Length: 393
Ligand SMILES: *Cc1c(COP(=O)(O)O)cnc(C)c1O
Image 1 (tube, protein in one colour):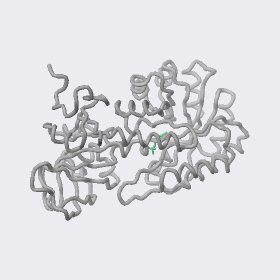
Image 2: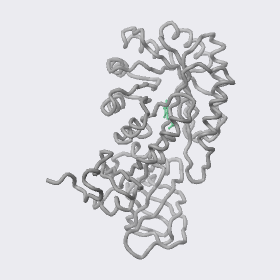
Image 3: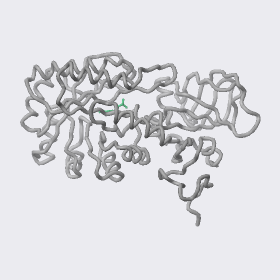
Image 4: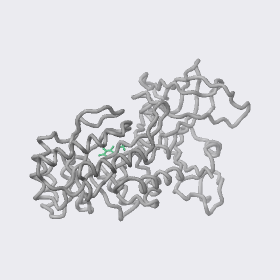
C-alpha cells in the first residue's frame, strides 16, 4: 500500500510536512489532480510571515479569530509560529483548537452562548468569556458554578462609522448598558475587560482611535477599573481596487491611541482573523464553459467565493494552463458563474484574465485564506475536501 494516493512530487520524508499533500507550486498541485472539484491551497510560508508581522508589530497580545479559517493545518502553522491564543465562538471551535494545540489559551468571545456551551467550555479550561447583556452575565455565572476565576470581556457596540463590513447592530452593549454592566460585572470577575470590533476589512486606520476614545468615555462614566482592552479584529487585506495602509500604520495608530486614551498598563488584546490568513490561501477553480465573457466555474457564491458574489469583491486572479498554446498576453474582464443551478450564483467582478481563457483552464483566486473555504456549502452537491500546501520554494 502506498503512503499517499497522489503522485509524490517531493522526497518521501517531506511528503506531508503540513498534514496535507504538499507541492512546490500551484501548477504542480493542479497537474497532480484528477478530481472534479475546486482545490483549496494553503501557502504556509505566507501564513508564517504574516503571523510574525502581527506577533512582532501589534502592541499587545494576538488571538487568532478561528472563524476566518478553521483548517487544522493553518491552526497548526500559526501555533508553531507562536500564536498561542485563539478567539473561538463555539464548542466545535474549542474542540478543534484543543485537538491541535491542547495548551492553547482560548477566549470564548461570542457574546451569546448556550448554557451548555458555557458549561462545557469552562470544564475544558476556558476562563475568558465575552458578554453584552445582564442575562448573559447571569448565565456565565450560573453555568460556571459562580467561578471565582473568570475573565469577563464586555462587548460594546461602537457608534457608526464607515467600514466594508460593519459588525455593529447585532452585538454590543450601548453606552448606558455598558456603564451598568461594568459595575455589575466588576465584583464577579477576577479580570474585567472591554472589547469591541470596528468591523471587518476596516479601511480607516482612525477607526481604532475612535473606538478607544469611546471606550474611555464609557469607562469614565462607569468609574470602574478594568484589566484589559481588546481592540478586536478588522485589520484589512489588499484586495484589488481596495488599497490599504500598511499594517504598521494600524499598529502605530493603536499604540499611540492606547497612550492617548489612558490604556497604558492594561493587557491589550487583538483578534485578527482576515488579515492573519487571507493571503495565505487561494482557491483553484476550473473553467467548465465559456459563454462570451462569462466563465462557468466549479466553485462560486455557495462555495468559497461567497464574498465575490454577495459583496461583489474582486479577488486577485491568475490563469494556469499546462497545455499549449500559452495564454495570450492581453487581458479582458470576465464575469464568473458558479456551478450551482441558482441564478444568484454569480460573481460580477470583473476579473481580468487572458482574453483566450477557455474550458479546462484553471484560475487561482487569491486572498481566499480567510472567509473562503470555511463559508462553502454543499449546495447542489458541489464542494471540495481537497486542500493542498504550496511551498513556493
Ligand atoms: C470575526 C471576528 C473577529 C475577526 O475579524 P476580522 O475582521 O476577520 O479580523 C475578531 N473578533 C470577533 C469577536 C469576531 O467576531
